[in-house]
Amino acid sequence: MNMSEKEEKKSKKTKAAAKESKPKTKKKASTKAKKEKKPRKKKDPNAPKRNKSAYMFFSIERGPEIRKENPDIKFGEVAKVVSKEWKAMTKGEKEPFDKKAKEDKKRYEEEKAAYEAEGGAKSKKKADDGEGDGDEGEGEQEEEEEEADGEEVEADS
Image (cartoon, rainbow, N blue to C red; front, side, top):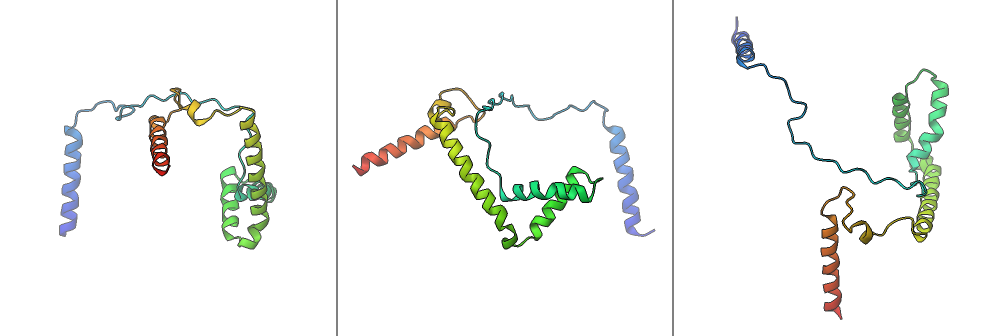
């Protein structure tokens, strides 16, 4: 027996002894204190849908083709194939999808502006009037920034 084998046997014995000496207790589900979650703010069904990225347009176009080629493929595997193909593409090949993404972003910004003009979305100050959306302390920080901006304006005048 060489030195490493002896050390290995010794460590196994000490581990076994440590297991025996520990009292068996039930493990708690969570050792950290659980934070109380605030309920999510409900999404307005009239709000405009977010814009899609160039990758999403590619994925939407290419995904069904991949499923036709491989009918037994799983959803996650389709995503992997799409991802590999996207990474292998050149900027020139991605151009049509980038163009679609830019058009979709423009569409989203227009719909969002119209939605906010109708009063569909609350302004920042109304959202920070005490009704929490899960981001504690942000309202105070924004007020401090606004005060600081106000002081700069006064100093400039």
